[in-house]
Image 1 (spheres, one colour):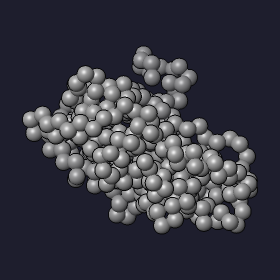
Image 2 (cartoon, helix red, strand yellow):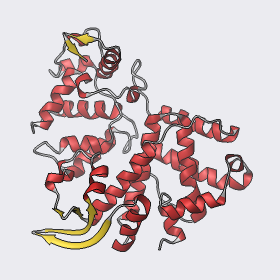
Image 3 (tube, helix red, strand yellow):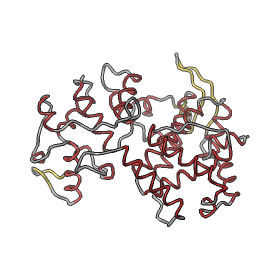
Image 4 (cartoon, one colour):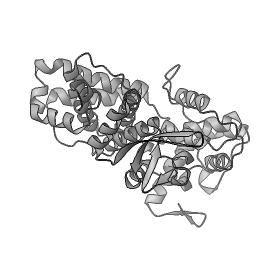
Length: 351
């Protein structure tokens, strides 16, 4: 049975959701002075998510920690910014993943079953040098693992017996965190009018987020375009193809791919998974470098891709018809996506 402290750590579980509903706190109530501490913690969660893409657990006051979770999500949804919503979802998932790895097997299985109604069993199985701790139903595994790009998660590389996929403890924790991330990220931005105090907090959060994630002139809000690989600049497409084929790219090319993907809304994990194909891949070093480029380490500056002129100087420019007049890879991306939406073609090929 989950304790009150557990509910604060995992506010997405059904007992936590039930507890929150029974308190029957309205939006108007949240504007009252008695909930000042709760609002402060919610703002703290959002700020840390923006700054670090992570949320530090704080169970010094379990009620505040528990209630600040849905309040923070509500405030983020009220910003209407899908990139910010996704970033917050990633931060909550990281917090969850870190905590889950500290739990014993019984509690981990209970959380998976309770929160998402997954079929999970404890199963100590050793195959060769691989020791598994849990098994999850094939259908539950496929629903959540589909968002992973790494070959490690592909079903062909998993142990499957009688309709169950076998997992290590950290893998089950990762699946739970990923499901939490998806459920938050897929929520619809909030359209209803909030009390003035809450609306102001949401506006401040959005303003702070925009001040931290600046795009070059002419390429703002590109994370909303949802363009496909065919709409990436030809130089970036070629670099990605080389990476997927296992080729070793020069530093400038790796930097270009990383900054481009991060700036169009790809997650740090998605970028890291791409580089797994490279022969000299080192996950620790790659994660450090990608997080640094994303602005989550060091100077906290989020980098953008080099200009087209810089790429030409390094011999990395491979222009096509759409490149005419384009000075930056992100500007190409925006232009290609807009043309595709209009059903237009370039050089005889639909974009």
